[in-house]
Image (cartoon, rainbow, N blue to C red; front, side, top):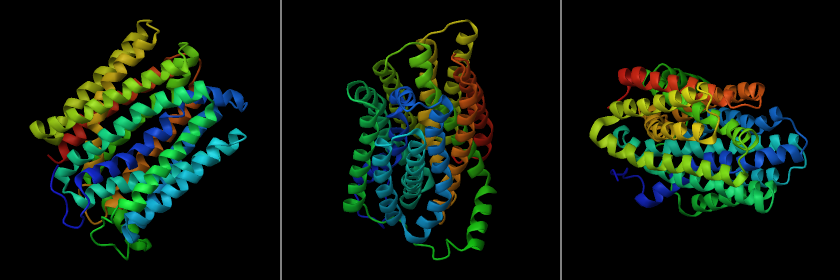
Length: 402
């Protein structure tokens, strides 16, 4: 574990645990309910486009809310924002679980997205608060290893809860996760902002800060990487439950196991990331991950064009993409906020906002192109695999930090 800032007495284990829970709120919120999505769509009498909106509205709210949470956390600190955000998350999770109609579920999921923005934005900023950029990727990777464990459990748990009980139970489980995270923040987490910025919420200061961030080539390079990487992952998340369950005929439990396999590969990749960072540095590590991503996307498209229609023809190539994602994610997230030690919240917010806008657009496209075949999923994955690799091999190589 790299050395910590002298401003905190929190142990390294507590820091990593906190990061794991805060970062892990994103996959558990999206993955755990995926096995329940076809069933709840049918029970609530909703269309597939409405079902997609429970995910895309959440992610749009997640992205937009970070633009507000970031400056607020720079002004008042990470701890109060986390307490507010996690409390709202618990309330929204309970509301989601007992929604009587799809419209209400969308509303509650949107509030969940707002609350989720506070957690993930603060997690990224905390890493920059406590660690220098060169150390941040390694620390972020450890936190994302914890995310990987949470993600491994999310879809299988969702599948089991949906099969044994119902979709209400699957969504109610999110409130338990939120309550545990809220308890940790309230009882153990210490403020990490070295010096709060009293001018962070002034419009001229905020606009000047945002302009400085978006003009920074390092921020743009790593944000392009994280945006394309998450859009590729989101393509799979938003369409896979319908493709595997309704098109390819898998059960909710089998689908949960596939999601477990993806998360486990991601977990292994975060360990690989830390080894490669020591040996190769950030830029070469990202380049290696780009090759894995392109191989996975190309293999998936090639099998589809060859007429192979099976779960394994999608899942095995996607495992290669998850290997790449476990490297791109920590390197990209830490790299984007690295140049901004005094505005880590704002930089994290902009990075998250841009990623979620593209994910929302991807979800909208999927909602209108899902046609009862595997084609939209495969086409989307291949498209984003090419852009991920181009970002890794060009922008990051030119402007990324070693």
